[in-house]
Length: 64
Image 1 (cartoon, helix red, strand yellow):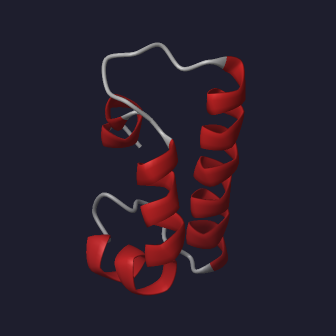
Image 2 (spheres, rainbow, N blue to C red):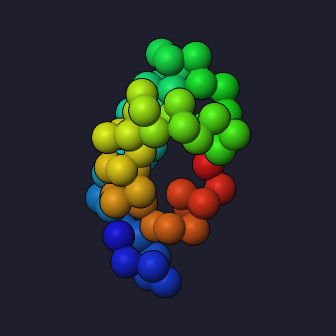
């Protein structure tokens, strides 16, 4: 999603699905704070995080 633009409803839906998949993975792997447990989050949920970062506006990702 392009930074500086307002996401459309369908783009938000895609983002929310990616976000939910990332946090579900974190929950499943007992990662309480992916910002503090960066190495573990990357190891266990790297693919989900990459999709979350790709599908969401950067400003939304920065504030997990």
